[in-house]
Length: 111
Image (cartoon, rainbow, N blue to C red; front, top):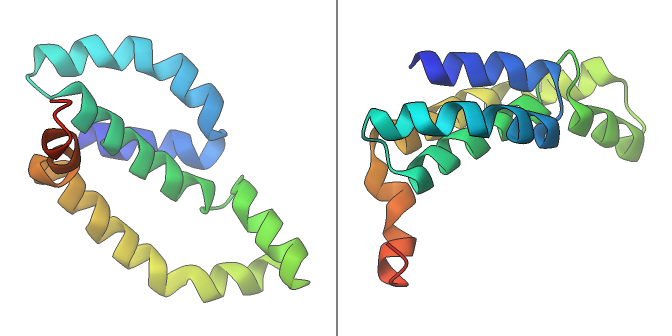
């Protein structure tokens, strides 16, 4: 839970690529020592940072959506509000049910 909160907060302030490059080498050994599968951790990280891309104040995807739709940022954020709740539900499911993120690698024989 604390990992999710930290990644969501950092994801709202920075772009996805630098966060991945900075935090993965730091957090991966910690999650491995806690018994979290690396693929599962990667999915948790991607969902968190994906939510961060559409969340103000930085929200680079919001600026793209605003430019494409020719709407104000405030209008785009207001239209996104119902989706934030569902995104948090999906984040909870991916975080607390590892089978969701580990199913496909298991089927493909990568796990």
